[in-house]
Image (tube, rainbow, N blue to C red; front, side, top):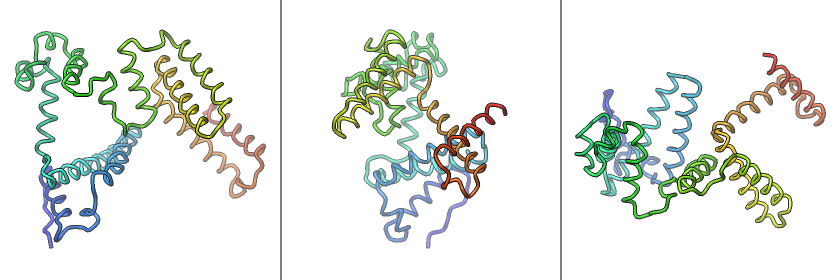
Length: 270
């Protein structure tokens, strides 16, 4: 039986993961995992971190950051078993990237990390040079599209906004919010006239994409806006349930609407 390591540093977690993945003595569940099966947990843990931040829950944040760190170590361990890279390579790469992208902080050290980006112009630009440095890094990517690097796994609203921002940098964008609003109305009409289920799915997708574009022009983060709307609905619906008690489900729609209005008014007065 493996001896659990003690300590507060990353090495202890790395050792634990190696023990859990040991083919002979490890945990059957951990051994059976792959990149594709662990990736959904990684995304979920990132959202748990964001939730703890939003609630300003420091104890929760400490716990959730540990869960997220475990995901990084898990992926790195599986990569090491494949002979691709190890956790040390991950930390080395991100350290080099941060030094390279902050020439105004590290000066000539950024030139050591990447001689093509550690210029006097970047140092003079300070944080403003961040996008220029990132653009130089993307220039080395074989995918030369302006949309390269926008992760497929991002939440759909967030990915839509990032795609639109990338396209806007090339000049492909509405000149103002009115143009994007007109596109929203156009897409609503197309949803209404969709014939087949496939057409309806496509047109609803186009409508959501257009709404994201309109929100971007209004200076509103659509992901944050929808998260707030979700929280508001959650709170109001729970308020309806409290007012109605056990008989909530049996109420008519009109009665439920009346409860909704009561909760809504109470929220505005509080």
